Length: 175
Image (cartoon, rainbow, N blue to C red; front, side, top):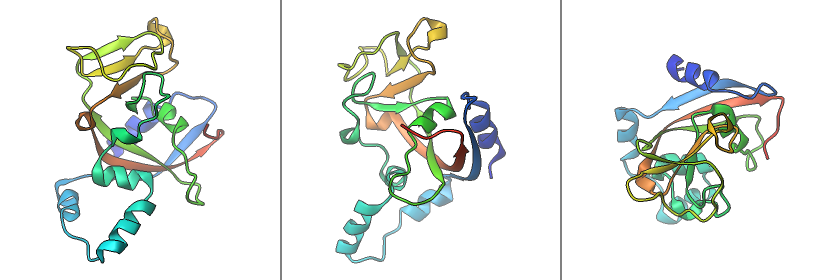
């Protein structure tokens, strides 16, 4: 298990009323990407059927994020949301389709070099203003309205999944 990612995950966990224990971390590497560039030995109809039943995180790792699946009711409009806070991301880690106590969280690279800082919710946003590449939801400690920071991108190429953390949790259930 990559120690650096485990330390980052645990260090960025801020909710005192719940805890998580990492079971596995899977990171993309050059060899991993070469494996995925091969062809599947499946009949085409079996392949499409498999695609529809894959857990969301495997579909995202395979094809990246898709804005067409963005939630229209997000705090900053329909975008792809991320956070440097692992316990905030855990709020959205749902496990509806499998009977397991494991939960999944993606590790991503996000283009957030020129954030447009927003103090209050604005559901009408569809992209940052000119000159910015993302929206940053500002925390209460910094004059905003969010308990924990978040970044929203509105372009599929602005976020790249590079790994997956599988973990168990205690003390809390998702929304």
